[in-house]
Image (cartoon, rainbow, N blue to C red; front, top):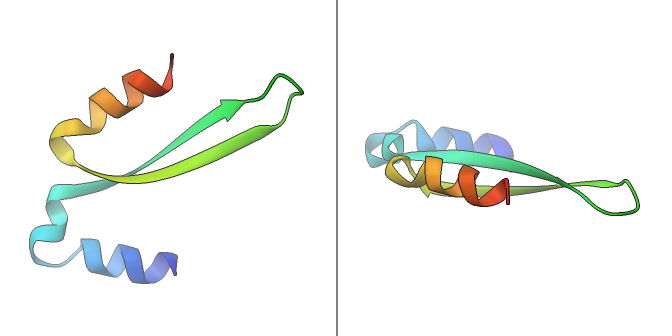
Length: 52
């Protein structure tokens, strides 16, 4: 499925979007990852919110 998303993002208006992957650590020590596709103008906001 990832290949389909990447191929879609490379054509036409898809270049205006980026895939953001954030990582968080639970109190037990396990890591979890969250993938979001956002407009390029909002990437810094998403990363700043993920650090909180």
